[in-house]
Image (cartoon, rainbow, N blue to C red; front, side):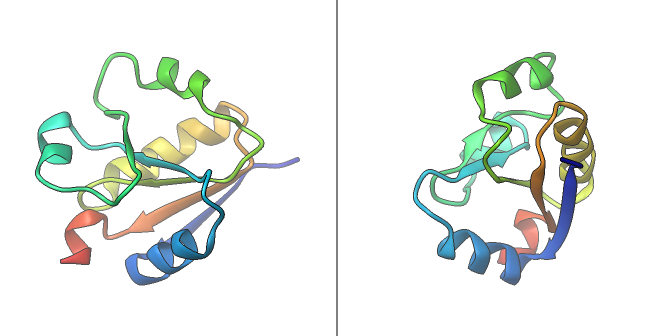
Length: 102
């Protein structure tokens, strides 16, 4: 199947996440410092700017939906492209990032 990246406004992203089943794959691709300052419950911190970002994706299931966000929306957009190239088919990217939730 073709990868499908859906960019969602923050409110829609969170609503879809809340409606999803419990074993959702949620990636916070900000730096560990940003992540430490607050994150969405259940998010796994995989730093997009880190050396092993692509390598850490191998721990995830490409057949399950994956939700990704960053601080403002830039890194998560790039991360979504990496996920698509890695074989993930259902990718949700939060527009505006974590900063737009406050």
